[in-house]
Length: 287
Length: 351
Image (cartoon, rainbow over all chains, first blue to last red; front, side, top):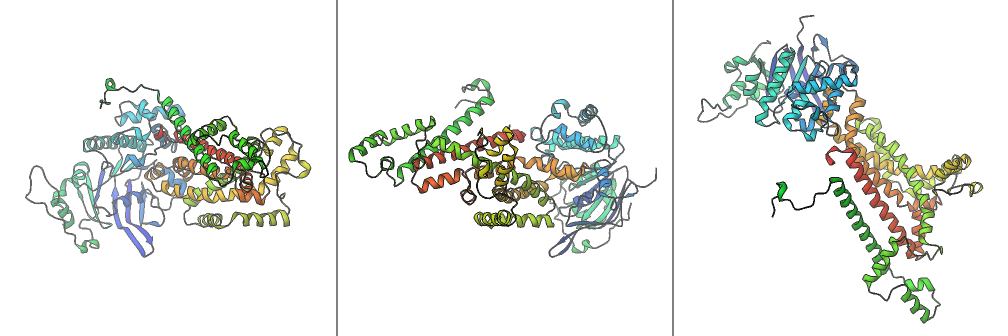
């Protein structure tokens, strides 16, 4: 095996051609992902979801992906033919979306959707596929997999739906999991449970996790490393443990705007955005 | 109020759910049909045509007039008249047609299969071509095929059918000679096939008279394509917009993330979700054609329901008109129930 990182991104741009000109959603970002949990944080419109989707080449026209390098395990994916790209999707890189209410097909049973994910990448017999699907549902802490197998998405709760989604995406054993706000649509009570499941599975399988979120606290607790995005660029990269020492004024501003139960503050600061941040270089070197 | 959240508090008898659904459906149908009968009855009464004179003719004596007036029950109160009308219709008695001198039911049994045959073939055309066209137009949005679908739809919406029909006859029958002319069957082939269903294509196929089948087919192909073209325009446009809505949803992205091919994403995921809406659209398009497309039937001398009702109306033959109206209304109700049933079949959420 080469020493190439799981995911290597260099100078990635996501552009949208519009009537009035080209809009850049992601503007020349570079980062790598190893067998670790990488948090990508940013406000709405900072380009964090677009980054996740670009890695799977899911940006549809009129969107456009450009990069000096976009490689999974050393294999450049921008030049992959469609068929190879499909093998990579789900097979090696997978993604969990925000709301299971919309991301599961409403007219197919849970079992059908899981089996489909598995059979897209492996030739397995029906009984074998069913067995592995039930095992996977068991792994994501679904108590009665046989019953859930025949249910339709509208018959399961949000938390269960998201666990089904995780099971579906991990079934073909991918190396990288992109989680795009996987807990934002869930009740607070089940958020931790779902995070815990993601954490355990990713760790056990030695996968790389790209965790996209707007919740700085959550990411700081959950991830090893954090990338902070603003206006389509990475403004700062740091270890999660060193987030308190962040240097960029935007990161500091975000931290100051978060309430703290143990050390209550008289007033929370309002984030002031400086237009100069849009084009200033990142404060940290690539790590 | 009793608390219905606890089992003991309930007083309603518990039906099995399927029985409840069936009963509700039946009640709806009965109410709709009764409403339909009421409307047709009122139309019959407010038309400025004297039903007595229509039966006995203008030169009858006053005695004959009074006699018929009583025989027809016109001296009874309106509610009683309506009751008589309802019981007659429910027994399948729509009265006699003044124009043809036959029972209206006999007439309709003769003309309806012609319309049914034409409408079914036309709808088949529209569905088989229109649905894929709409799907492809949505998937390749903005491409040449999308533009083509739009152009086809535009013509379908804006071109008068009688004009297109006449041009079609001129080109394909008159000049090229590819198809047969107006009518259902060439004169040479008439009376060979003993009717079973009244639909010549079906009957000739059942009896194995392939020469007749071929001739009937060459007669029906032009009007059926014409009607099919109009439903194609409608169906493909609706399919396109349904598909666009689905293709933008998250579960389609999920399907792509799984690594499925574009074919599986489009037909296996997105299309599965529009079947429900599509059923309604197709059912309505079919019902519209079953009504009998008067202009097409007249241009192609097609002895169908639309032509029958129109001719009867012009001849003041109210029994035939009302009979035809009831048949069409019942078909609409039937098709709606059928699409409701398909809903339950296609959509797990409706169960």
